[in-house]
Image 1 (tube, helix red, strand yellow):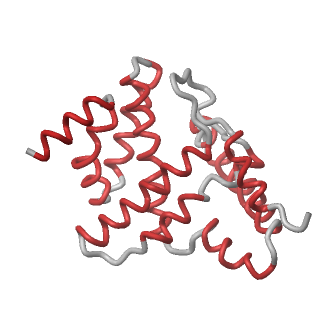
Image 2 (spheres, one colour; image 1 turned 135 degrees about the horizontal axis):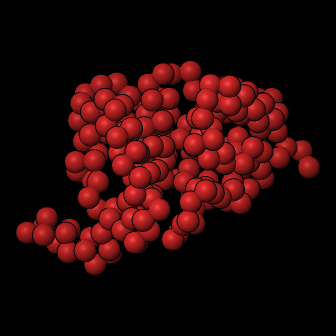
Length: 199
């Protein structure tokens, strides 16, 4: 074996999210990362094309796709624990950085700069878009669980919506206004809604 980076990335499907919650539908970090990448790309396109602000949707999508990759080594630490206090948060950040370094070491030297820029984006705007997309994916998960009758996600739904609105990002508000309602609907309801829009 020469380099294990992509074999490690493929193991993201074994890391389960929402470990402290009862889930109607289980979610792993590979599935989550795909959704976050789609949402980060959408937020970046909205920022660029609706609000006419410079933004790179491709870079945002790539950074989002790998945003939880260090969890291959660390697992998914539940949010109430991760953010319980500054000491835990700082320690976990150091562990994440070590995991990132381990991932980068699993690449050929010539590929490391490109993946380093994705795993730890230097652009503050990209980081904000990815963070918002990550929270938006959590909000969508809460909506879907609540729509399936899982009351365990009610408080998380309120908290994630409040956090999203607190970001003050117009692209998030635009997304929620134009796409948010669909995530609590069934496939038949979505089809009927699309048909109504076409009339």
